[in-house]
Length: 341
Image (tube, rainbow, N blue to C red; front, side, top):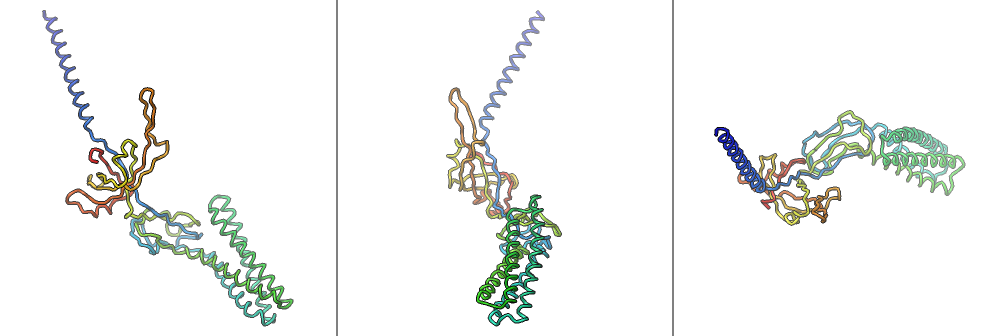
C-alpha cells in the first residue's frame, strides 16, 4: 500500500509539472506574438572630403575637429617652396617676353640680344628644374605615392618648360641674325607661352590656403601641422549636420508602410529614446545579396530588400525642443516599431 501511494504521488507531481510547463509555454508564446516588430536604422549625414592639388607641408591648421565652419572659412595653409620658386621664374620669363615683344620692332640691338640671351638662360634653368621634378615624380608615381592626375600635371609643366626653352632659344638665335616678320609672331607666342606657365603655377598655389567649400561641422582631421601632404590626398571632412537623415533597410512586404511622403515615428536611444517624426523621401532596391529568401513546399520566392531614407521633421515628445534634431550625428540608432505606423 505504501508503494502504491508513493507511485500515485509521483504521477500526480509529474502531471502537475507538465501542466505548469504547458501554461508557461502558452503564456510565453502569447507574449512573443504580442512583441512589436522593431526595425533599426541609423543616422547618416552628407559630408565633403577636403583635398588639395599642392605638394607641400602643412604650415598651419586654422580649425580643429568639431568646429563649425561656413563657406569661405580658411581651413589649412600648405607651404610649397618648389612651386613658389617655379612661379617666380615663370613671372620673370613673362616679363622678359612682354618686354621683347615691345622691342622687337626696334631691331636687334645689342641690349635686345643680351636680354634674349638672359631669357634663354632663364628658360633653360626652368626646364632643368622641371626635368628634375619630373624624374622625382616618376619615381613617386612608380611607388604609387602620387596620383595619375598629379603625374599628368607635372608632365604638362615639363612640356611647357621645354616649349618655353625652345621658344627662347629660337628667339635668341633669330635676334642675332636680325629681326624679321617671323620674329614678331614668335615674340607674341613667347608672351602667350609665358602667361600660360604663370597661370599653371598660380592655379597650383591657389591651393596653398584651402577654404571651406560648404557649411558644416569639421569631422575627422587626417593631417597635422608639419606633415607632408600629397596632391589629391584627403585632408579632412566636413559634415553637414543640417542634412542628416535616417537610413533603413526594409523588406518589400513592409513597403506599404514606408511609401514616399509617409510620416514614420522613430525612437532615438542616444536621446533617452525620444520620439521623432521622419518623412520618407527616398526608396531604392538593394542588390540581390540583400534579398530575403524563403521556401514553402514547392514554391520558392525572394523578397527584395529596399533602402529607405527619411528626413527628421519634428520632435513629438512633449517638453522636448525641436532643436534636438540639430544634435543628430552620423551613426546614431533610430528604432521604428511597425505597430506604431
